Amino acid sequence: MPKGGRKGCHKGRMRQYTSPEEIDAQIKAVNEKAQEAEFEESGGGAAGVPAKPDQSSDESDEDEDYQQKCKGVEGLIDIENPNRIAQSSKKVTQVDLEGPRELSRREREEIEKQKAKERYMKMHLAGKTDQAKADLARLAIIRKQREDAAKKKEEEKKFKDGTVATAKGVQSMSLNK
Image 1 (cartoon, rainbow, N blue to C red):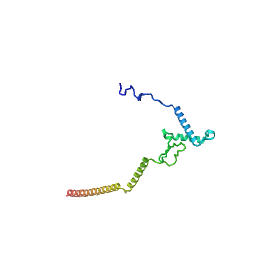
Image 2: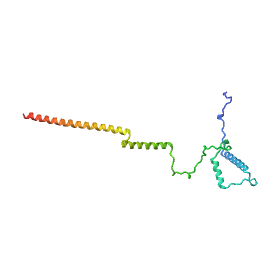
Image 3: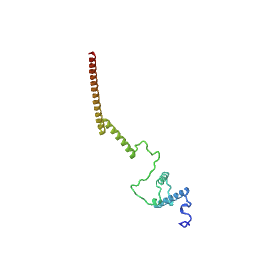
C-alpha cells in the first residue's frame, strides 16, 4: 500500500474546464449587478425602470470593460495609485509612424559609439591624437634612416667608382710601360 494511504494522487484526477458560454454568462451577471448598484445609488429612476443609455455611452462602456478587467476583489476596491499607469491599446489608425521615434538605450549607445569613432578618425588623420603623433614621429625616424642609408650608399658608390677609375688608370699606366 502506498504511503499516502490511497492508490492515486490528486495530479491524475480529471480536470474541469469552464466553457466560454459559462464565462460570458458570469460576466453578464456581474455587469447587471453593477448596473443595478449604480441605479440604486443614483436614487432610482421614474417608475423604477432604468433609463436606456444612448449608443455613444454604450460604446464607451464596452471600452471601459475591455480596458479594466478585474481579478478577484480588485473591482470592488478603488485604488488611487499615481504610479500605476493604465494600459491602453492603440488602434492602427492612431499609431503615428511619421513622428519622431524615441530610440532605445542600445540604439543610442550604438549611435554614440559610431560618432565617437568617426570623431577619433578625423582627429587621427589630422594628427591631433597621441597615437597619430607617435606614428608620425616613428615615420619621421624611418625616413631619416632611409635618407642616411641612401646617402651612405651613394657615397660608397662614388668611392667605388673613384677607386675603380684610379685602379684602371694605374693598370693602363702599367701596361704602357
